[in-house]
Length: 188
Image 1 (cartoon, rainbow, N blue to C red):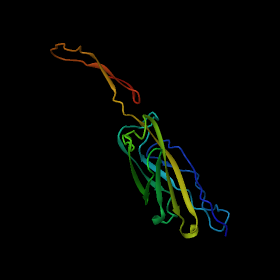
Image 2: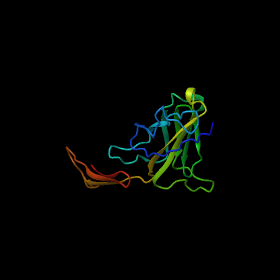
Image 3: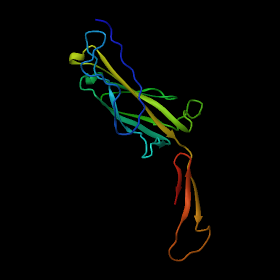
Image 4: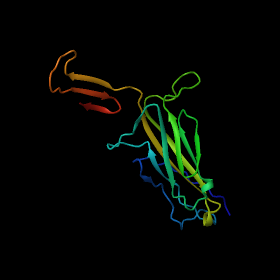
């Protein structure tokens, strides 16, 4: 029997809380040896995600990358391993179907320098597992990209009316704007 080479794929997350199939092989597919290849591992990433306009979720401070491994029925559950990799952070590992990895965008290195700058930050969640039954001896894998927008700058708030130090009796209407470079402009 020849050795099987694990499949490694990368897919960009397009919607939060949606199953993200990679390129799963039909059960009839086989590798170069006698053991059929199990389907690729797919993911359901529940956090972080994108807003209704398709923009990456802004984060500042602490957040978790959470989700669940899918398409694992033909894998040995005790062999499932998930790894989170974000540039500037130590890799984190988890065992089992569910995962939750904490990230702190305000974390600093030994010299007091922030590990991440404001702007888009992308990392990957990858998983591996050993086949069982007719897939025994084969390994399944999968990977998915997860991105956020790191935002440590508070929004600029401007009140247009009522004027500062003005006196009013009765109904009062406030007008103003909130401007945040990562959230756009909001009229109030």
